Image 1 (spheres, one colour):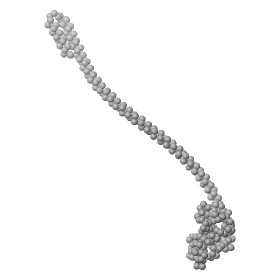
Image 2 (cartoon, one colour):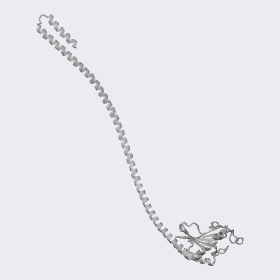
Image 3 (cartoon, rainbow, N blue to C red):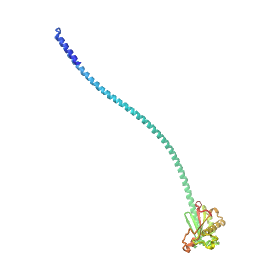
Image 4 (cartoon, rainbow, N blue to C red):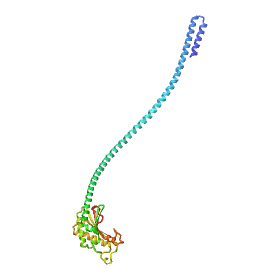
Length: 301
């Protein structure tokens, strides 16, 4: 465009020069105008070039913005998906929490009920323990009274060593050597023995919460041949003697049979050495044992 305007200005100048009818001043004016238009053309071309460059920059910027918008749309889509997933996760977690909260509430209710039950059981056990302690104290007091009464009634026999009385773990035992109750090899109680049993039985009859167990014991000397027809062994002899004592307590002192039991141990529970005559004498004995009703070990034979 600039070349065209310059050619136009040159052509006009030549035309004016070759035509003899144009004045110098007119020519100059036209020449100035041509130069002005040429300068204007150059300015326009520069502006045009700038506009072209600006257009290029704007196109580049447009592409960048378009890419940014595309990236933003993609990011927005990803964020929307993330948001949907997050909402779904939140809803799922809320449901889980609600379910667990409900389960926790049920578990808490069950736990409170279990605690209440345990507290009630504890209260009952505490009350039961207190009652048992009171009952135990009463039993101990009764046992001591019985012990003292027996010692008082059997003072002479105890001093002679014919009777011993012991108390261990709630069991009171009256131990009587054979000679004060029976003749050798016999199961019939001697008159003196009946007197002793009467004193013992009268005291034991008045005890409460206790059963009376009669135990027969012998030494380890085998039964004599002359007694074989009556007692096959020391077992039978010890049992027969315990039976005689039980019958006396029931028949003569009216102690209920439900409270009585007997055991024949023969020679198998010695309390002294059978190698000596004094030891064997101690082993030949009748023991009357007071035992708690709930822990009665032996049944009547």
